Amino acid sequence: MSELKGACIVGQSGGPTSVINASLQGVVQAALNADCITHVYGAAHGIKGILDDVLYDFGQEDAEEIELLQYTPSAALGSCRYKLADPDVDDTDYKRILEIFKKYDVRYFFYNGGNDSMDTCSKVSRFMEENGYECRIIGVPKTIDNDLVGTDHCPGFPSAAKFVATTAMEVLRDAQVYDTGMVIVMEVMGRDTGWLTGAAGLASINGDGPDLIYMPETDFYMDRFLAEVKAVVDKKGECFVAVSEGIHYPDGTLVSDTESRAVDSFGHAQLGGLAGLLADEVKRSLGGIKVRGIELSLLQRCASHLASQRDVGEARRAGFFAVESAIAGASDKMVGFACKREYGYYCEFKLVDLAFVANKVKTVPREWINEAGNGITQEFVDYMLPLIQGRQEYPLENNLPRFSHFKRILAK
Image (cartoon, rainbow, N blue to C red; front, side):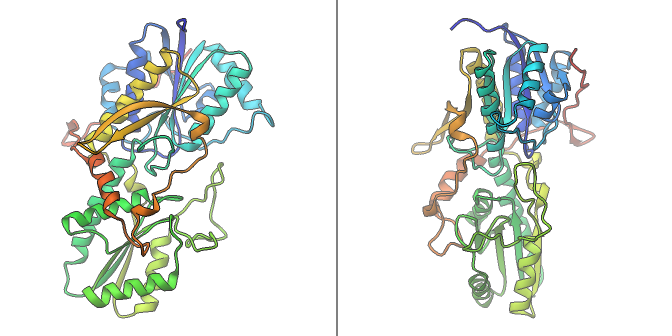
């Protein structure tokens, strides 16, 4: 295939993670070193930065600051949750994107995000092809929910899982200080899947994990939940519960559902408040025992101080692979991970069709959840353990983390 020469744009979208910037670093460094890529631009706040013509010139950033991206949590370019319309219904945004691509001679577009972001990639790719504009488009996976299909796991998930498991261990030790029993309900992120909540069960390997784990893959019954909590309390004098924010009743209604709950542009409910709700139910049911609801909230997304070294390294290499693949001629693809665990952990990269990934959800296999639906099996543990390995060492300044800082010089 003939060489395609032109500029590239990289953007970040969706919820931030502790390693999304490691992928950004991989893309930027690979693109800056590629002879066929003339300029490397970063879109401010994802696709909105392209629509608003707010692009940062990475060619004018300090190499040291780009190198520090691998140690820097959250989305350095800023993120968004902006849903593009179906181009067959309204192509206004797409015409604007094409206008910006032509203005800067953009021939490569890399978008780092989850399944909604892959939907954006797929739509933009199709529009460019239908309008005869050659631009190679690659999605770079990211999500702590670990719910992207076509990949063994998603960058960001292992580090968030390590944080959840570690925090579970610490919370339990805190709850056991006094000689009076306590029920802890810890709410973990996970709208449609229980990958991250299940990771709390890793703490049980060291004897410090939850007694009960509830995930969206199985229906939730309040009466059964209260009975199971009581059974653990009667036996141990205490109970530790980990629960996904997206658990639902058999009819699909979220346990935490309220009429006033806000939704984003993709129609996703902004969840939260479940831990307090369940804690109140336990208080009413059991009485006489101290109950505490804990919502990890944003803390679990970007805890780079507990990042998995393997997660950081894979995220960075995924960015490099995206650029290498695009230069080689690939487009309309997402970077996926193909992993083996039989004789030690091994992972290599592959390319997956964007249309196969967009708007689909990978759930925890039912056989990885125990029969009662309130815990994980050994298969889940065997899948997870290799992903959280290694401690990421990071530079310090004044004995605090030294994060990357950009000059954010606008493209001209």
